[in-house]
Length: 320
DNA sequence: GTCCGGCCTG
DNA sequence: CAGGCTGGAC
Image (cartoon, rainbow, N blue to C red; front, top):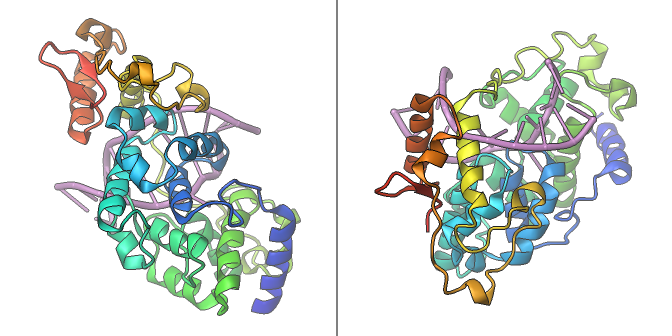
């Protein structure tokens, strides 16, 4: 049974795997790590141009460690959750200084790096180093739970039962386990989706316990309810950061950076002397959002996160 | 409206 | 364990 599922899945993978630039051994372990961090809560299609531009400028940990924070935040563009960019740079500094610019090869060491949690540490172990480890993300939880248990995976963190299941069905062969992780995740992303799974074109339809049971409770309680975006602090924070990126603070910002990531450029030699950090005057900050209570709340939280600096005159800029 | 390949903090 | 944190594609 398990062998049948594996065969069907791998055949599907061979025909349908998306050709992402960090797949199929075409990048370094560091490149895989960057792709995983960028992909946290962000769709792959949006990640690709950012990843390509990023790797061009900062191909390894040492180069990223040497960038200014303002450059890094600017290059992050509109990928969202910009604290990830900060953590990525902290991570780069640790790898450059403590690991001689080579990503460590154990789960525990990876997990200890800034911004790297269980999912990313496992993913790097599997996808970058070819290790045999069960990768657990929301897609894999959903697919395995449906196929093998016949029930929906519910929100929150992975349960012990889900972890045990993932470990139990992971192919014994290391190389097969990597393909397994990738293909189960891919199936969850494009076929076995949360609310409207495409069971009619699923390679595992014949052996899926969930489908056989009539898909009980399809799409129920799959994750925490998503916050609305309109009007939230997240939207306001995004607006503020976007305005600061547009200033070109950090010397490498390009107005197009937010749009298509092609704006990441190395600091031009001519600019090197212009440390002159442009800041956004207070009145222009206030023009960004009508509710000034919420605005100030967001400015304070961005400051606490280390994503902006507040100057004595109340103007804002990216951290230098 | 749906769907996102989580991490960190308290 | 709950809650905060983006933004775009379809």
